[in-house]
Image 1 (cartoon, helix red, strand yellow):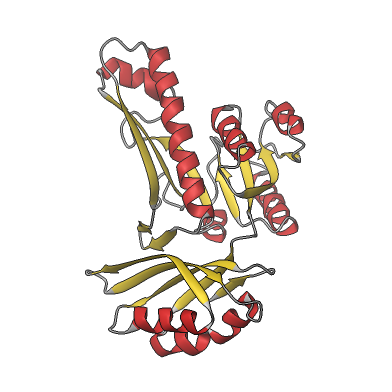
Image 2: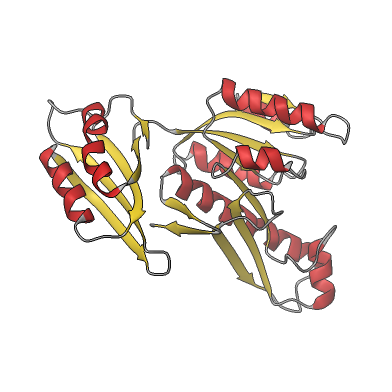
Length: 290
């Protein structure tokens, strides 16, 4: 159970538990008793695990009831079915820290979508192991933190990163082409709140210049995968994937450009799904209500 509540009348309720008869009716009846209008309700029963997933978007239609009161009283419902739940105030944008290296396309796309109001988030900082993208951060008035990483200082730099996350109350970390492998310990501490993006050739075409490797093999499909970060490199629960058809006329440079497009689209969609509280982690997979 967790609560994110600072005085609004709209909220998102996420709930998971073992599926059983009467859960949805109990939850919706409780919300109705609290003068909540339900504008969205999604549920999914996973038959293999017997797990129920539910997302409800509500608006309180009474000046005498607050989200605080709903949060205080909901355990009377949750305890009946051992429901794991979170309530998020829609007025509070998700606090996001972005990590980058030298490639700028994903960062540039996220900043553009943020400016256009497509991504309801507050960017707490941009952290990089290089200085190349400092001007982009400063142009937007965003704090830029330079944390160069090598084999000797990696542990200390990851500690510094965790201190920044705590200081800024960051809720989500986005690796927007951050070209450093995170330690197992850091991956565990960021479980469920760090998103990475990479091309979808993996496990094929590993290492440098993957699009040139793809050109040499005559690939017909370019893709990108956005997923949660785990200690299993590039194998975390998938949130979003994007693909584009290509053919023999595509040069290596054109494949790279196409790859950039798929990466930006997949990452932006994954970030949006997360910050709108549409994603449920389910083992090595995700359940997503769009």
